[in-house]
Image 1 (cartoon, one colour):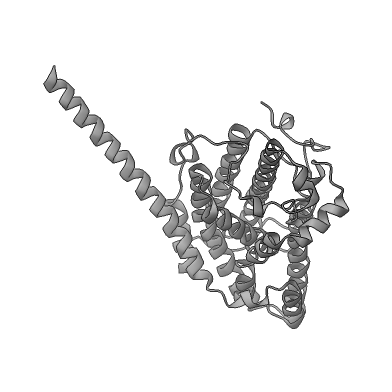
Image 2: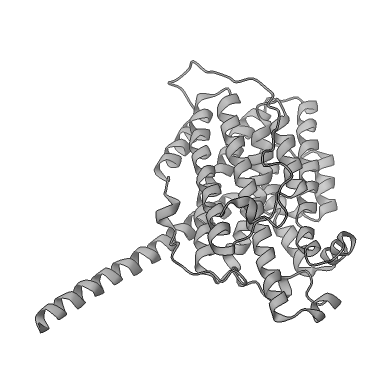
Length: 368
């Protein structure tokens, strides 16, 4: 079925065109490069995988409870609207929320693919071009996987959220070569990693857990790439240039914080936008969720050297300043380990199944 037939509200235009700015940069230095980036490039090559094979798409998914979301996590829980909802209504609400979340993941991954391709074009260093080329393939795979999950398992998509689209547009329109790094690798990817991780660690559904674990294994490399490249570059910038980047980060973080309300879902259930905002502000779960979503961004921003007074005040206002001391390397290592553990468990189960099949065949042969 065409995607346009699955949207809750079809996009007004099937194509969103963002004017490209900035120079395409060629480098004639092919032999030298930073050891850390070249090592990451090698890892990017080694870790390529096929989403059609590594993920077990035969696993069944209940579209009306695809993530095992508890009642308490739904924004309407405890409101007068919840009391009037039937069990079917609540199931439909779960389906819409899962569709909204994974649709934004899908749109964000397409944005990441385009930004990675833009980095290949605009970054001046060959080692960064090499790695960005592997990331472009990673992001294509992620968009493929999220699209397949939404089409085949949930059967519903939401359009791109206005705030996410605004941040993507700001990132892509900027002519400075480092801005796709900052907007995508640090802000959007950092936010996505935290959202993926929260669902991965709380869902009891095997298919979305697989998808999120394997995607996060790739994303850990992408954030590491952004940190390496920007940390090196930002040491060279003036105070005025750093302040410009900090302003971009502040605006982007407020946009993303406001993006996380899921107001579009509640509007589809007949609730006004004003009331939907009110319910989201009253939701204790959503407050916790929104804070956790910055657990990857704040320490990364601090690590790359953007930690001016105005930026710190903004993070205090958002209630996420204390996240600056989180160990980002430890979080990334855990992402790798979880994906590898999932692989080991799957391979062990498949091996045991093959052994059982051989044993049964031998027994049947002996009996005959």
